Amino acid sequence: MSRFLDENFLLPSRPSRRLYEGYARGMPILDFHCHLPVRDIAMNTSFRSLAEAWLGGDHYKWRAMRASGVPERLITGDASDREKFLAWAAVVPSCIGNPLYHWTHLELKRYFDVGSALLSAATAESIYDRCNGLLARDDYRVRSLLTRMSVRVVCTTDDPVDSLEHHARLAADATFPVTVVPTFRPDAALGVDTPPAFNAWVDALAGAAGSTISDYDQFLAAIKMRHDFFHTMGCRASDHGIEEPYADDCPPETVARVFAVARSGATPSPADARAFKSALLHELAVMDAEKGWVQQLHMGALRDINHRFTRAMGPNTGFDTIGDFSLIRPLARFLDRLDEKGKLPKTILFCLNPADNAALAAIIGCFPGENVRGKIQFGPAWWFNDQKHGMEDQLKALSDMGLLARFVGMLTDSRSFLSFPRHEYFRRILCAMLGEGIEKGEIPADYGLVGGIVRDICWNNAEAYFGLKLKV
Image (cartoon, rainbow, N blue to C red; front, top):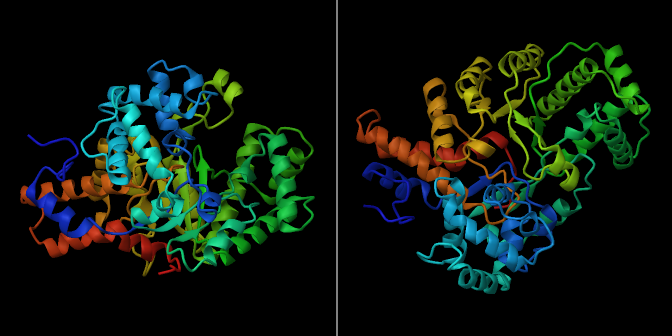
């Protein structure tokens, strides 16, 4: 019987262990999508406690605590860090079967060397004090947490109106070996169906671009100016968090009218709002294609469905779920319109509903690019799916209908500087899948060949795909 979290964790066969030890272990990390606060990297922040580093902003843990009946005061309320940590520790044993149990103990082991200790109410005090003692040291500041996990690239998620001052500071710091680049996330630009927030953002855009915005053409020109600026700051990717692909017809006079309606403070009709989003999403993709950027589409989240909690706590506080939106037909239309014009950028498609796995794994093969390996990517298992079975299902769908060897690999999609063992978690699952194929005779026992694929998925494919200029 294997021991929990031993050196063979998630590696059930000899071939899987050989692949992991010989080819995956020690590979650097290119985290091409996360929500880490870049200011903390630039300022090399230190955390006052493990609770601050671990629980702040972590919707996964919040949901588990709420499911256990923990009072909100001990989750996001005014309780002390120690009280919040003790409340979380008491919940952890109930997380067996949830990826949080694996992630929690991987992070304690890799960052804080807690050995075989398991977090529970009984061990909480000693583990908390040990971790806090380490976090107080200079070699446990944010930058060291990154280099400790062999992170070489971090792609943050940034609003087009951001000054990127912290990115500039990091780019100029030759003493810090990690390449930190922004990602262009213009979700607010699509928000004509919420005029107050939309208009506040348009005003901020005008200020950032140093321009006047009185009509749609000026709006688009200001976005283009910020897109150009992001490019000069090393950005090579955009990202869109959308419910579903927007690909409705929208003639120029319609998009101009809808923009004017929203700027007046009125709410456009749902059909008009969707048409506006379709036109703008297309234009944003064209900008990406012209600069050789990667376009990322995160699709399928039904957000903030508990209105009582959302009113009290605000959006993005752990009350999102998997949506069942129409996906494939509008996505095909969106990609095809761009492809017909020769303006389809490299694109990564993320789906939240695992029922869409096969369809997305199939559609990526419909839009190849000459001299571009894996131009359209089926993105790694995301959010509710980034657990063992979700990763296995995504990898198997991609293997069955596409080319696993061209896959750009894993990311954290996290706000936590302690989340990078998720790359190890993914790599072990990848090696287990390929090792099983070797053991069954379905894959040749050619470790140079298969191990090369492992290394490509861990790093090489993403490095080539994004084309970033690395510090080292």
